[in-house]
Amino acid sequence: MRNPRAVLGVIGGSGLYDLPGLSGVRREKVATPFGEPSDAIVIGRLGDQEIAFVARHGAGHRFTPSEIPYRANLHALKQLGATRVISVSAVGSMKEEIAPGHLALPAQYIDRTVTRPRTFFGDGIVAHVAFADPVCPQLHQHMKAACFAAGATVHAGGTYLCIEGPQFSTRAESELYRKWAIDVIGMTAMPEARLAREAELCYATLALATDYDCWREGHEAVTVAEVVATLQRNVDLAREVIRNAALGLTRLGPRSCPCAHALDAAVMTAPAQIPPAARARVALLLGDRFRA
Image (cartoon, rainbow, N blue to C red; front, side, top):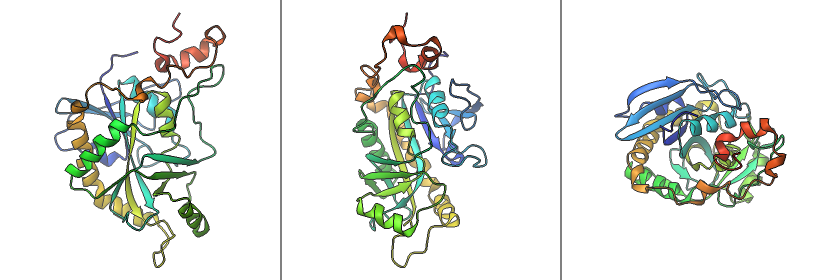
């Protein structure tokens, strides 16, 4: 594998690349054992921090939420040396106080997706990582400070419900989800967060509230036009948050969170029983574990 370079990964729309002060910008194609990422990785430097960006839906927004190559995206970031990942995504608000234009930093997820590959393992090797607290606590607090520094209205904590999509919810579904006391609803956090944990990457979601889904009385059903319009108004704010997070990343110091050691006791398969192909496929994730 190549030498680690980019220590902060950012997954989101292509508009995030235009950070003030980002220099040495280049595009790099990365091949992974799980296929090609959504697009070439955009790499640049902000101060002393190198950042790798992945356009989640590909150039021109070509992939539906279920078609996104989540495994390839995260594996590519790890190949480039990323240890922390900020995931930026549009969400619907499920609470009155989270108004369109506000930001949210969920701490929990509920996964309602059904068709997406959700593990790097299988086909001869089994691993069970702990996932009770899916968001890195250190990165979560760091992102909270970055939001405040940008002057954003941010709601820290709460739960992100991830649905399969690509359709938005029915009114009946929206009312049901509200009874679950969730905070925001989206289509992309899962299996992204699961895979980040398996890859021992610190992970946090920066959620941009674009609408009230369809639950709010007197509020029209969510439309693509509404989502895009709100996102366009908030892209500068999201970029400023990411910029703050990147410039302040050195203050976090070495990782001391459980994310960095998620695989230490997770692999159940006896080393002698792991097929060579499976071992090669997850070699980057396993590191020195089981190395002959």
